[in-house]
Image (cartoon, rainbow, N blue to C red; front, side, top):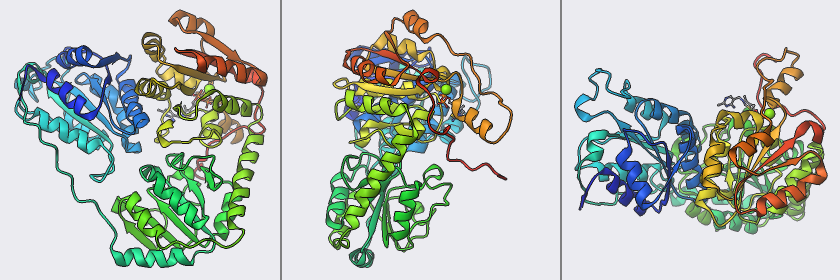
Length: 544
Ligand SMILES: Cc1ncc(C[n+]2csc(CCOP(=O)(O)OP(=O)(O)O)c2C)c(N)n1
Ligand SMILES: [Mg+2]
């Protein structure tokens, strides 16, 4: 099939992927792509390429599929790098298409506009897959292969895929022979491995399960295992919502809490599914887990990488869980109740510890429909309660930077809100994280999605301020000038509401979430009052 130019071909490929909205910044090095997308789909002009990738990433996460970002050559592609690192860390699916200088000048060092040294090398370093389009015959194949590589699934863990496209080739007519890229074989454990792991599971009297982001495709299967065994479910942050968090056996993202540590000490078998055991979720790998450990992962390298494993099962989560559940037996009497009690205890303890912020947590949940995205930047309210206490019922609603980089929440929220226009989206951001990409307030004002942006304003990088206070160092680099958010919102044409006392939370959030457009809700943390103890992050300070 012949296409008039690269833009038309890109639209064809995006339609195959179910993508209707693309994020980016227009440039002389992507004009044909942006024009075709704007004509046939929806092009969202964000204000920084990093946000284009964040928005595309969250668009994919919110739909359980893939998003697309368009950037320019050189600085534009470089600006995207930090957010590609986030997507790489998350294994989330982004097709990033960027420009390149005219093919005649590639690598010539003549200073062609936007030319950069080894752009493909840079993209290779920050993407799961990177490729250059060399001619007008192979562009379709290369774009489809990139999308396939980006998608999580039997083919691999997924991640960002970057494609650079010389501008002369973008303008040229394209020949396309659509062929679906072949999928490699799905790994599966052997019958013997399953039987041995199954025998251990059958003997379990006090079982626990731990689910990570690799389990999110196995929602039914995971629920089935909980039902058959009476096991409690711990999750990483990424695994949240795989089984809805109002299920009585879901303890959730509380593994390092004292009550869960003692539950883990009493458990006799642990089944883990698709998790990295990241440092923040295992107290820097110091958390103790049962030795009778069955681990399921479709990445062979993950098996036993962090914790010793008695039964490594190399396979896809859903079929492997189904096979394993066939061997399961009910836990001892009382274990299910113990799990429920721990579930209630960890929640009550955290609720109490966060003081007046608990009212905001409750008000967000009460204002939102059951299925709605809550995108979270790296701010104390996210790290303390947003990542744990605020219930999630579907992993697609649970959007946060898995690599922990600040500044990505608003871009992610915009992408998620445009991916799911039928429901409201909430963004939780700190004043510091929001400032990183403050320009995206203008994207918000322009696109007007159903998005409530909650800014937790404490006049600086609160979490680092707390660390410096706690460890007795001077305050360095943590106190920030923050804007008058009411004036700022007005300047952008955004409604502004304020929460400065617990009793404001419910009415303000109800009103913001019910609106059919964006609202900036500022939480005045000084007026609201402190948490019981200043929050510090779960990181080890070397030497202390
Ligand atoms: C890209 C990046 N740069 C720096 C950091 C270090 N960092 C982590 S949290 C944080 C403070 C964020 O401030 P704010 O958004 O206001 O949230 P608060 O801690 O005040 O609640 C900083 C600077 C980071 N995580 N990511
Ligand atoms: Mg702050």
